[in-house]
Image (tube, rainbow, N blue to C red):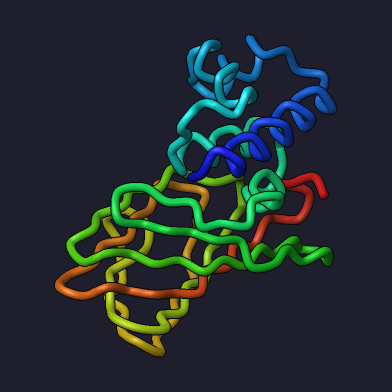
Length: 176
């Protein structure tokens, strides 16, 4: 992520934390981060992983998309790029993402907020995705919906995989 995007994320993160009435120490502890790391993130000089951003969103009780909405570049790490496409305002809340995974990528995702579900549609390539221990092989044109409130994974083989991903939040499980 570039410096401008890190700064934007940091300021937005700080504003959300303050709106929730949480101290730096409280949010860091709840998200399993060192206070110094959270402070650096808020200052725009950290280098957050996707899992770190997810944990912060869960602890702030906001959809992942709300936390990353001000960033207009793909977020990425270890062969995975993710970009928010749109946030629905209806109930249930639905966030839509573009996601791209490099060949031979195994991405473990932490559990999202209680009751959250993901729907994936493969645009190009192939991968295996779903809850750990219950993944589904998918090729271009295939879709799957699964419980995302438990650990899940995305695993590619020999080729890149491009997908549309939507996160459907449980009613009452998030703050607009």
